[in-house]
Image 1 (cartoon, chains in turn yellow, blue):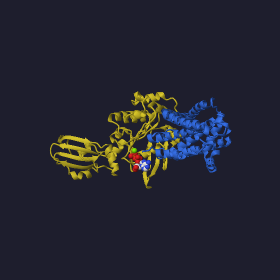
Image 2 (image 1 turned 90 degrees about the vertical axis):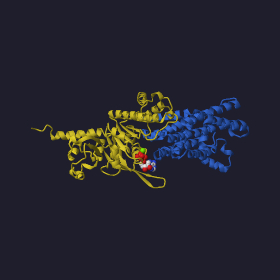
Image 3 (image 1 turned 30 degrees about the vertical axis):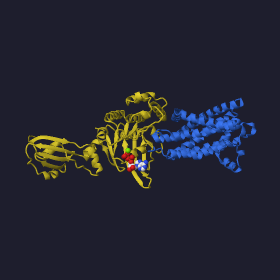
Image 4 (image 1 turned 180 degrees about the vertical axis):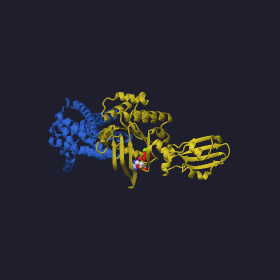
Length: 344
Length: 259
Ligand SMILES: Nc1ncnc2c1ncn2[C@@H]1O[C@H](COP(=O)(O)OP(=O)(O)O)[C@@H](O)[C@H]1O
Ligand SMILES: [Mg+2]
């Protein structure tokens, strides 16, 4: 049989594909950026060291890390608030160094700190802000966003009269006026009540559906786990781990099994199990009629029972606990490849 | 392309209109006091050449004094309050070019300065009418427009630059109190250079505000201590210098908020 695609055709497709890529550059590409602050006493703070990140359209990337890890500094470099000491940042293919305004035009930012506006109402600020993006009449979008964020009844109030949670929502509206393809959210839910937080996340998910790329920093790991397609874990200015959220959890965490037996366990030698399972079983302990085991997250319950040579008839009850992002996060921060799991 | 600039200019103008009482009433009251104390009460005792009353001599000087003060205030307080609220960070994040920011703040300052100077002129004219029984005209209207716009730009740019480098409200206040105010008072607002001690005359001639104030005086009453061409040259050169100073401040200064 003849091959259906000739080598020429393959080359042509490859060429098309690279064209496609240059026509549709990534929403965000951060390459090897570094940032050092000089503090008042003259000492240097290496806030960000050799950080690289990528975000694709319709993807939420969680930038996670403890306080002072460098998250805000990374965001500040993307928003031009801080200069980039080394490396390169591109927004939709526009370099921040050479095409700053074009890059800014594609970018929406919700900063960590609340921005107030002393003299103006919500509607006025949103009108001016649209203007900065070159949109003279943006009333439809303004009304849409105010409504969406539950602020339409406050639109003629002064921004300074809003409560903290409303100011946050207002900042989100401000960041979305020009329909940016990339949104940076720096701890948007810090200090926000649960109800509002939930509705904010729903909104973020809607944006993702529209194909917007989102960079999010948070220290609520449960939220990050639910929301982020990929996470990057940063500590002391360095990216320690980057990948799909599921992979990180699978690779870095362990599962826990608690098996209650009808009578005391008399099967295999427990201490030899780790070896016998080629490392998949990390530890097994026996306490009265219960077996407590910590296993590799790839090991299935069935395989586990097989290794222990247990029959279903022997078993009263089984409890399992999967690892979560928090475990993976702690594992990364502790610098270990696998986390020792806390007791059930 | 003009939309970002016009939006920021619009914001600047509305910002000072929001505090209209503060912006208009304060200079209005102080101008009235000066006009009353110097122009009306002392007026007959002060010698003025060329047959002009002291009041007429005083009016353009006071106009420029309020213009300088208000244009400086407009851009500097805009930047400083934005540092306080975090709005300055917003300005950095949005696609506004340095040029757009510079000219929007510059023209915002021109609008406020011109506005307040015009009010000062009107108040002065009322005093003048009551004293002399006829209306004080403007000898060279285009010259006046030129001096109001160009001086407004100079002090708008200066205010922008000072506010960018200021680390606190106090530092900005110091620029105003120790540099701008003395230069204004010693710039020939109240007295003609001929009546000064020769040494003071030399200092006065080194003060750029002297040329600005006398330029406006020429525009309004047609007489001046200096050649009008020199005044025009000094103001134009100042716009050029402070444009670069302000641009440099925008590029090198910090947009970070005060915490
Ligand atoms: N303007 C600054 N000057 C000096 N040091 C700074 C500045 N901003 C941040 N840092 C330092 O850089 C590090 C990273 O801070 P940041 O990016 O704010 O962390 P995060 O947002 O992850 O909590 C911290 O050690 C912080 O103290
Ligand atoms: Mg932060």
